Image 1 (tube, rainbow over the protein chains, first blue to last red):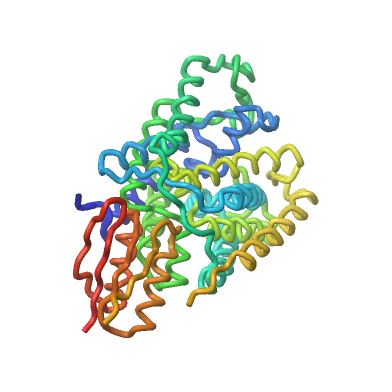
Image 2 (cartoon, each protein chain N blue to C red):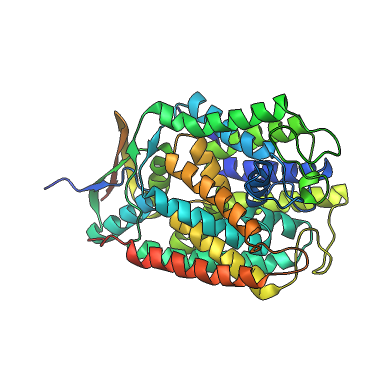
Length: 361
Length: 73
């Protein structure tokens, strides 16, 4: 079946649609410059499940559920669903942990870095430069033969597990809803203040998530691949989608009165430049070594890639570590433990990059 | 002439493209066969081959695999 969205203009249109939808999600209640943030939302899910107890960041984000299920639907409609796994899963899990820790030092994943920039948060420039630097390091490993090895076809049911998990999360949310002003339902934790308490209406967030998941599966939208392919191949394909997202979100923010330029006082952000840079550099390196940005990993998990699902669970686990051990930054700045964690993260990622190389003959 | 095959099945992005470009640079011209097993890799390898001035002559689905034939005279 011809992939109409896979072409040059498909990805530009989809990037722009995602940018506008993200801006709208913020308008409808999501936190500032956080219409969509894969890392933040997975962190909120870790909180909703009680894996960490940071009271201000606990919410079962329907956008993430939608990302996986939208991709699952697209992959099935277009007969691209392929259950596969077995490419160094424990390495991917560890990369997920440190990708999340790096992202929570900066306070956002590449998606949010773009949206922060589109909202006028100039600290995002440091984050994006760090992201590019981390990706550049990763491309050196790729060019010298870095590989986590092949995955293998497996039972279709194994590929269904991640989408089914998301159906389960949604069911819990619907059957055991939040009581306004109460921080816990029977099963899930809910923030009653802070970013976790700010969210667009459930069904709108879910609908946007489904649409984005569907479109991103068709176009292979990837915020890390965008920069990686420019560095490695001078291929602007994915980059054009990311650029469209940035421009569209900026225009939408202007229209909705959500553009507030400056470094100081930005929502869910700090101004410690060196750690904004270093946190995202760590995340960027981990994303390259794992083969996709956090959004792309969700979309891949929806089309049957069990290794990407493991990476996602690594990120959720990393969020739990980040908040339980006081590694995550806050608007007040970076913590000493966070700085140490970034250094350990770099050591682990470099160890993986240097030792897991096949000689390319 | 022995058929030149790049087996990129099961590899994460962007390794199928890197392997293809490495082989293209090695042989310079002629005919190459690339094996991939996802639609994403199929699209990426095709785009990369065209960018290198090669022509995608044929894409043949074989079970779980796509067999891409690329050519440059």
